[in-house]
Length: 202
Image 1 (tube, rainbow, N blue to C red):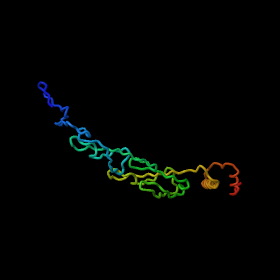
Image 2: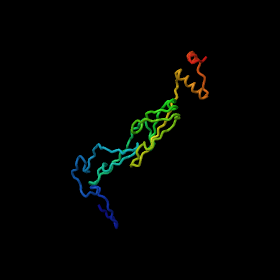
Image 3: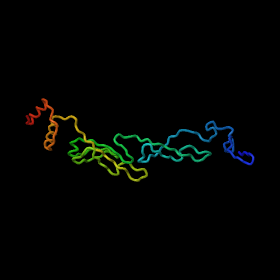
Image 4: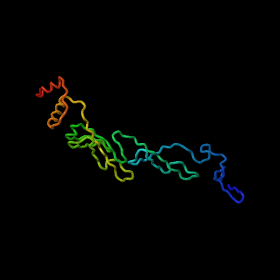
């Protein structure tokens, strides 16, 4: 639509046909003359390995229909990753923990450890200390785009018993004596006196 105002000519979009050049006198009741109908659809989306919580995937051509028969836009899908209590993710690295007793840590052992590809037998050397970390290179989360993998760090937790049987306490005291270590005196009582008599004490 052209408007003339003195020496100036102003061209604007027709407010009735919105620049389409034609009017729909009997618009479709379903699309109201727009030529497009909104409806829900279920799509199957391929999630790439290594995707993280909150990342967005772009699905080309599955968005809103284009105007005047033009190509459809894109669909953006935000990914929500369900957490796993066995693992904690740090970018492409993975952290987990394994709990062993102080005897297992002192003498060495083989324990089951959860990994992203299943449980493995993890060998711990004698004298393993609390908070020791076993790092498995390239066993973490795959980097998006095929540029390698992160690492898997297994943290070793050593448990200290809060209650000991009489025999366990006696063995630990013997161990402390052999190592020249000073420990607290045993609690006095009938059963502790009885154990000392059986072991040749007074």
